[in-house]
Image (tube, rainbow, N blue to C red; front, top):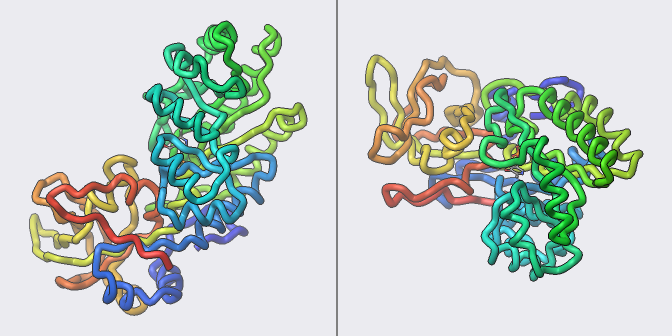
Length: 390
Ligand SMILES: Cc1ncc(COP(=O)(O)O)c(C=O)c1O
């Protein structure tokens, strides 16, 4: 699916997807487990994580567990000697139960329950993120070797998901917050930000890195020395349109980061989507067929409250293909794909290009690893898709 010689990463054609699917016996998996399914390939997780490390050797990637917290996915990162970004006690437990040392984890939730902070410190985690003064008090009296990163607000309206709406201190608040932390006897070692998820280009990330580097300089001028910069996540995958290839992102970013690394600033990142999305394929069954408003409607056994929760929470539009033996090109028509719940919200898309299908047919959607199974619920009493590891 990925070609390193291209500067863009394109949506797979049916033929390309067919080649990938040939490696897994999908009819046999469906025969054994039924639908809906999420087919997880941990080797792909490892491949994506390795690709990031190769592309940005000076940046340590902490895999954002929130994107896909399946044990096999976490084990794949662990087996790469990887690092983890956790955001809750449950995520701490998931990685530490796999034998991951706590010093390989950072706890990046900017606003935490006091009890959760204390428990994470007890479990051995030492690096935490904060973005406001009230948060600092939660660290009072805890281990003296705790290190804090100040999360900054860098709005990214052009990102599909602007992650600075809810969190992040304004850069002009940084000095006061750092001084307050000092007065409370706490050690702030760096800055962090998230440039927005599923970025269309590297531009916002570049600007954020430049701004953060400038801020580190300004703070050094007034005697506040920082030596960590966390550049968050944001790398995109091609759901329904080509995205810049990792190499394109990296060439510009690497240049910005090199001088920081030379000055002894440790640069880290928190990739979620880029690592997890390519590793899982959604498989759903057609359970109903009709025509409404002159269009074919296909009702699936998975939808917005299930694996396709990424459409609602993440605003992405996965490409859905009809599955047949070879996924060869067939005449396609604009079609509606509806999920299985009784409400009218549960419509995945009104513009899928699909061939005529019947009850019992299957559809498949690639890039369904991130923010899918983790955000699914059981509305209408419908079980979540079974995750099958291949
Ligand atoms: C704090 C934090 N770090 C990392 C990530 C992962 O970002 P992405 O999936 O864009 O790589 C997220 C996503 O919500 C996040 O909130």
